[in-house]
Length: 263
Image (cartoon, rainbow, N blue to C red; front, side):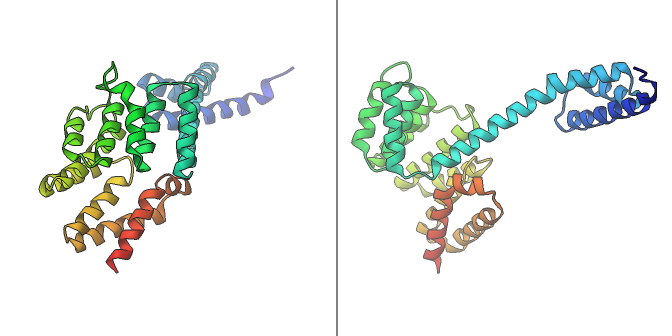
């Protein structure tokens, strides 16, 4: 077969693919090696440009797409989980512990039990982890602190939270500071709680700090500040994706209830 008549078209396609790859490389901040290779392909559309574009597609773009798909799938799963009734989530968590008794499954069950106002059950679920190798694990410390708050022991919760490494992850940082602010507020440490809530809202991974801080402001009689914060949350909710609204439903509902209190 004579490829000569198709050569201009082939070179154009190669250049087009290289340009697309180049845009992706720049936006995702890939190493300069790929940029130079793709620039070469975009300018000349040669056989070597085709090789470079194919390599970039399979070594960079395809893994990147898989990662994005995995993250999206996890977000969907969190959203679906968040809209289930709490009793249903507890039953499912108990089944997972019975099937596979891991740190993640046990602490998740204890956290749900504490949130449902069942501290004795949560204590029993968490007990095997408190004295073993997981005693200083951030997840165990956070779950233990949440349990102490549910049992009206804010000082014990504050002690536990002081042992959590905030550098573990953004989610751990957000959760730790939010619980710490609650513990400080419950002990009458209003100034410390105020500062901790503000710190928790910086780079927060959830709407919980803002919702709880608004409630704190109302209890402090700072209605104008609470109203401004709740209006900001309402604006966020209007602009949020359906998935984010489902994921943060508990805190958006809390904000709506607080807005009704202000009327």
